[in-house]
Length: 487
Image (cartoon, rainbow, N blue to C red; front, side, top):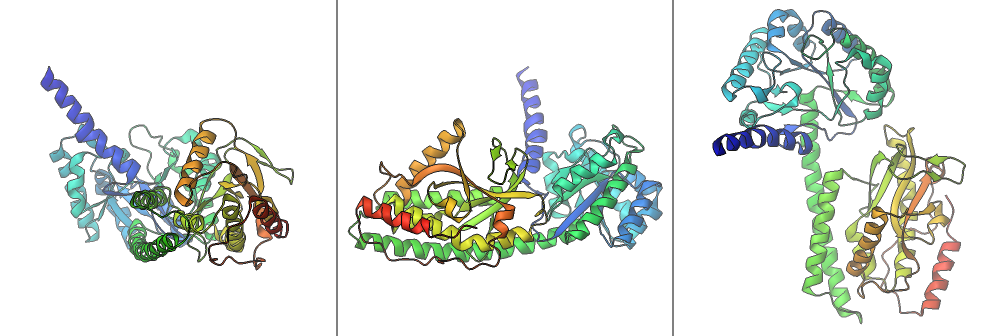
């Protein structure tokens, strides 16, 4: 019995479940998302189909678009002329097993024979061996990784249930339109003859793809094969690594300079423990940026963003509209190294708040420009953030809201207290009236007013300010915020 249980555990964890989980969630040993400026990939499984695949090829040719077809070997064997047309018209061909059967229910040798047989069929038709492999249903076993040297496993970023006829062309289009953007890999089907699919479903897919191709062209997107998508992504990653290494070197130099300044000042010294905490903190930021795919804003190194759906409670805005759950937002994030620099050269929470306001004011024109460049710019309702700037944000065009009570507000306030202990030489102190966790929102229309403007005061790195009384600091903060322009 113990041996049986062990083999069941082995099968569901090591052989089947874990490889699929890590590939689907983290992209381990599989390509599933591109890192591109305006390229997107349409991929089609289960064909070729004598009725629908030629229609789809006609449509792609009409729009000058390229796609990727993961063919079932048995179908390719029946319709070699369609496979040849796919290849001759510049589309990518990939393997989808010889028969549409899950790799979880086949032995490794059986899967290998399926892949090799399909590869031989495609080679016999086109004279070229395919480089890409997508297992049926995206289900991978541990031995599929061994073929990575000759075949690139390709999964997807978005699938839409287009194998079911009841989804309908209109609903399918809306689901696809919501995900339309650079780097996306769409999973679609050009054949409805596999188990669980509806024979007439590809007709809806073709109708929806026609509208998506038109929308993509209006947004300046390019529809490319998966080969070009992978190549562009590798180039972008290499360039990103170079930039990251250069930025890291600059940050290390800045932090070393900050440490020397702090040590020479009258304030407390930065000991080895705090330096270690800061190093871990910056490493966490790098991981956060990778996981959530944050992008830098303009030429600045202190603010990044991502576009996502708003998930909080409805917020009533001053123009009478509401920010509701599901609305697209451009979420802003400060750079931790910049926050540390500001904190180490400020003597109070008020001074930190003043300098952060100036930083945000200085980059608002760049945020407005970046908003205009977004493929989904017409759908993004506002820029959004959760910040420690409570007072002063309204003067540059933001609306502020208290965080609703709950675990998110508790965790955020706990994090801000920890943050103040890290970035301020004296740690977090009570009575820091300008520091409070709040939601800040600026509508897209108000942000547009900053486009092309030169802020009243671009941020420069100041010398550590002289020590002043709390009353003097408050007066200085009020003076700064009162004279700030409203966007």
